[in-house]
Image 1: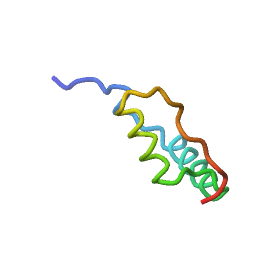
Image 2 (image 1 turned 135 degrees about the horizontal axis):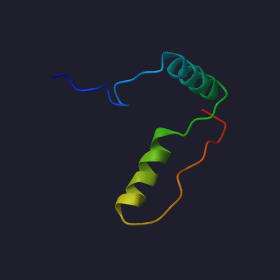
Image 3 (image 1 turned 90 degrees about the vertical axis):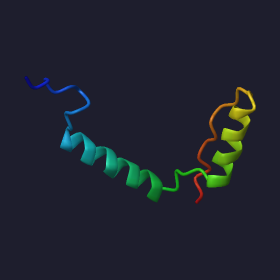
Length: 60
């Protein structure tokens, strides 16, 4: 007997396409965080500090 599809098996291709387009537009607008800044943030989290995630500087 086959298992019914779960919500994880269902892919809404239109929603996926829209999300990718929005992400690409965000990156093109400079809404990115430098890799080194993210690494520093993650290291702070690993050290037990409760710090908010870095925000985009609007510059790449």
